[in-house]
Length: 119
Image 1 (tube, helix red, strand yellow):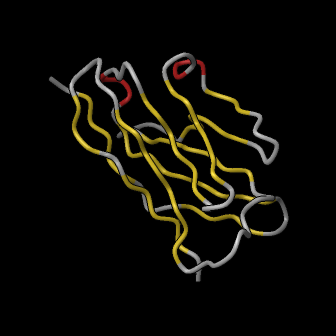
Image 2: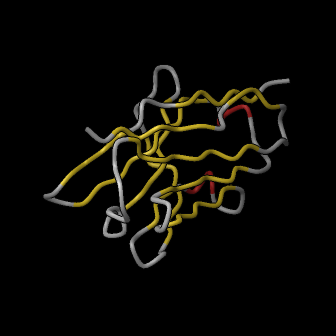
């Protein structure tokens, strides 16, 4: 059973940076190359929203609030996806989830990592 495990969350002051990483446990080999990888977040009382995604060809997309501050990247050899978050704001506070998905094949979610931006 494949499980995605996020790491890198924590407490940071406004203007600070964090780097989130996500790796699959229970999988071997380079099997996630064909998968779309993404980061979502959910703040209390809000719906889960897509923050950033990266396609198999490296094409990226971001929610408007993250553009210019966040960078998503993937390492297909290691089956990992990362999210570099700079210039963090209190409104970025949320639980962040990674997702690996391949339409009609499989859809994996991590259990989430808390990011808190506060002084």
